[in-house]
Image (cartoon, rainbow, N blue to C red; front, side, top):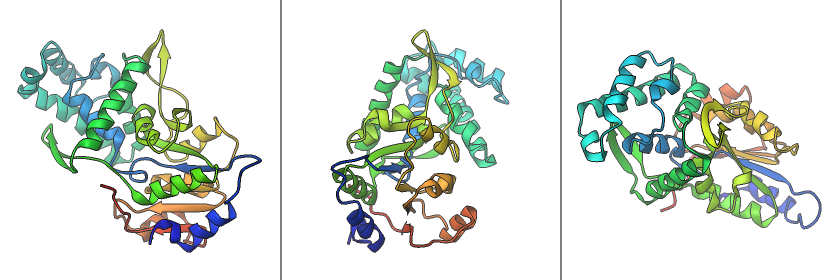
Length: 300
């Protein structure tokens, strides 16, 4: 049995079996934890640290870092060094921990929007073409790695993302029915593009955190609404007035996006979080418009 056999999904697909003419309906999917098991934005952040892909000191991009002076000193020590020599230094491990610690501390405190935007700001100084190349490389490495763990800055971090079968099946079925499918993510846009490209979703239908460009170079300023929580709806509305007929996500942060759907709401419980807590946060109860995928299948 696949998600396409779920009665609500089957009825939905049957209702929308023929859109050969007229406006194309809309479906939206979160990326991390929904289309893939894993977080491609975080994976790109980890890889940036591993390969020291910085054009500007993180201390200048994160002026509110509580240990900014120390972060600047470590960056200045490490920047002139090559890969193996740099990564063998105690200073490198301290530098990595200062970046990772700041990110995870903000996530834990509930400052999710700022945390996610901050790690995107670290690409300031690159051109859009350069950062897209880094994103392609990050996804290729992440997808080709066996799922497991890796140590960075003294932290045990996940590696090896995989597609979630239920989302892939839905995207393919919706594509056959001429839906316009959008990926709306709180990760940076460039990291999501290669993930969904393989599923037929073009870059112009990918929403993620972006940076303003000045003289052809990315600045540390975010462009437009940060697509986190209700910001996902704001970002989507800037590009299309069409209300989605289906929305899919794994996270309670996406409750506003899920409730924005005029049709089905698909919850992919890839992180094994409490369903009762999810609906308590949503202030609602599951009804016929909700499809709950409690044990999603990971594609190998």
